Length: 101
Image (cartoon, rainbow, N blue to C red; front, side, top):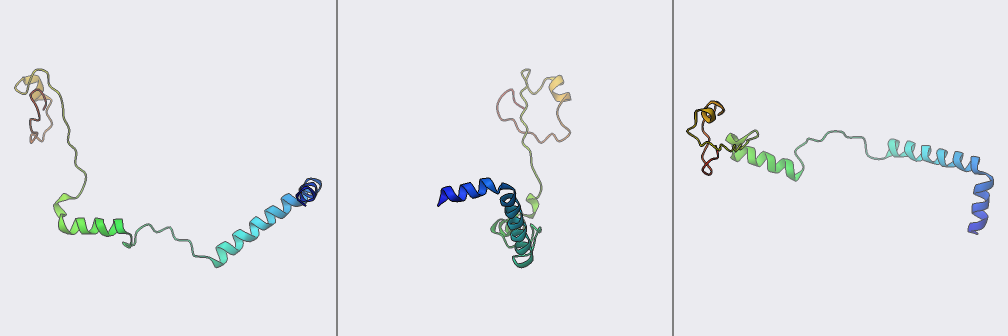
């Protein structure tokens, strides 16, 4: 049975390709026409992660945005003028370990 089908597909390969293309087109048409509509909206607030994000924003409004912790190694130490001149404008940095700014 399968050898007969393989032989038919080989002998009529042009018709087989055309039939596959037609079947694919019909499936796409009916899929777009009768299945669920296209939805490119990723918001909506219905997912668990969106609900968690809203909960975090309600309870911790001061923690919005990204934060960064930057550690810079200074071999000369914190009191060296060359190290002080390269510190960022926000000088609320904490000493993590001797030699680190």
